[in-house]
Image 1: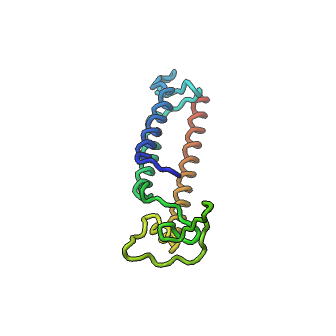
Image 2 (image 1 turned 45 degrees about the horizontal axis):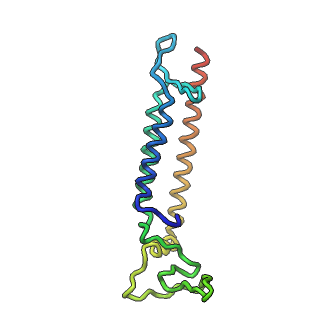
Image 3 (image 1 turned 60 degrees about the vertical axis):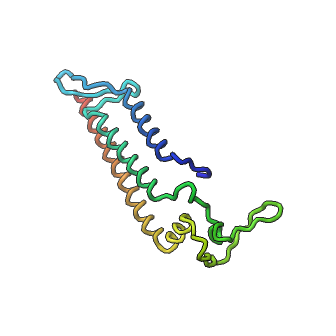
Length: 169
């Protein structure tokens, strides 16, 4: 995000909701098969299922909106966002610009910030990550990735079972 917007997360939540609504518009049901069992069908894809598609849509919408809510709490606000340079954050005084406008990246160790000048939130977050919290975040992301993969596998297996059941009838 080079120029983050103030309502970015609200806009993303609205977009998720609108996408879920559009995807659900193609679903019809419950319909009854010859045996009287309820099923749902998608007129856009030709897919059919025994389970109400609104349940899975709601589950994934809640999962995605909860992720956005977590990110909105963890990421710095747009006014605090600053891209660190190689030598530290520009707010710490290590960003050098030549007369022609070229930025020079300083690779020296970060100097102490004067007491009268508080460090920016983005600099503090970067420093924490470099102190070992990156490993914790990496483990959490790997765990979330494995959970997502598992959920996708379960969903695909369930779809396969439902397709076989429909073909049997």
